[in-house]
Image: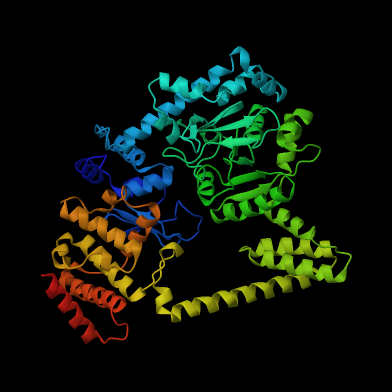
Length: 582
């Protein structure tokens, strides 16, 4: 492992999880736990719990959980090694030296340094005589030298090996360049620069690291924009362009645009709170990142069909994390960049001040689909609008916007209110029936929240959960589970967790949650944290463990032998198999 186990154990001992989480969330103690509103999703009633006895957290609303390292990884949007470094600094512990061959953290630092050198190289290219096309393009777009410097904008030459040769001269390898996506290899094995003849925009994370690049062509070539691929140091779904600058803004809101140039033009125009997604649609991770820095997002997307669809999708994602959404309507220009150039800062500010809230925007989009002079289409419009408004939790919003919809269709407000209520009751009835069916179906009720981890054999999986829970509560119980192997587990997820625990126990390594954060994903850690919320007493752990193991062995035998065999017959088969193995 890159970071020594002894260091992780000391870090865990020095970090009180209640103290750590309290620096982000207000907590109240109740019945041995601490409770607060979850920092990872929007809620009014606290469902986020912290257990100091187990050094773990778990949210019963969004189902995220883990230990102190997992919390920092999720809250600060960083990887394992960076989370450890943050906690080490907080605890006053110097980070240990990491062996280069085994150290992912050192590899990451090496690749980040490569990207920094590449950014300097691209920026320096702008001053070269043969970079005149790039300088002309930036001048045509009206970007000042200050803006070019602020965003580190540069240029990649058309030749296919200039960056590669420059970085090799600085001691980096072709493998390094391929790993960060600065170079690509063709089907004949030839390696060459990914970005050629493009204006270059470095992508910088919240900690100031250059993690990737975007490049724009200077002509009509396709693709217009080319972005770095995901790499060991870059994930486009977790980062936003210019977020490193916006996090310092005092505006209290963020403008979300579709591209680099819109964002850069807004910053130059005095709006230092614009960001852009990085060649991908808005993700839930983007939304959680935005929610950490603002409670209001203004969408500035294109008004074409694709832009409208993207805005509708973004509204739903942002609303889930408790962010208030407004939608900017640009008239007299195709984008913010052109609008500011034509009408100036103050005119764009008035445009922002008049931006529609997301309910007005969605109502307007629904209305555009129907001809309200036609009675049949008017009815369809009202039903469509009522269905959307029925999902609003605030009765005041339902009343106000129901009135607007009624006025647009020329009907009595009371009729629209009744239709919204009918839709709410219908939706509520469906939800209650679904909940009742789930409650009456023990197998479905026992399933994980994450559909990727669904159990094929819930009976065995519940026993597998019990084994994992017990050995985490009392590590010595592993002595009683020696006959059980990960291959006998029915759930791949639980088999992976058990395999990690078993290996660590055999190697005399720590089995606390923090030590597992390096080997399990965030979603896997959350599921493990959920398992630990259930009650299993170590006092009668040996008996409970024997019962759990027996269920797993029976279900494993049932899947491999005759599914119609009785328990007694299955036990005989198991015993015979064990005798043959001795």
